[in-house]
Length: 74
Image (cartoon, rainbow, N blue to C red; front, side):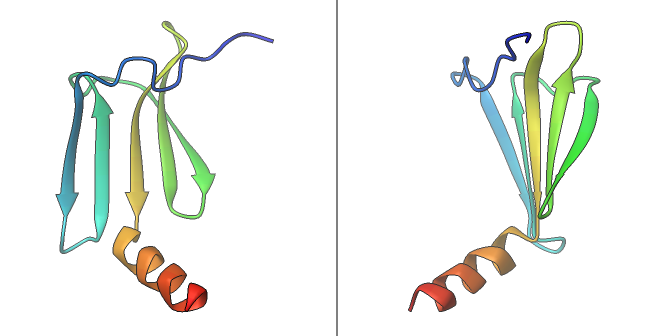
């Protein structure tokens, strides 16, 4: 099985939160073309097939999920 690089270089993590869409966008380095993989639960992983590394992630409904988890934990 091939090794996939995941969060090996966290120096240049960029992020942007869209309050209206309740979506957090993260990229490792500058955003670039990549394959988008929906891994479920509102999480999308951006994968560069050439370098075999995760280059970004998107979390849809982040605030909503966070609040739900807090309520369930209480």
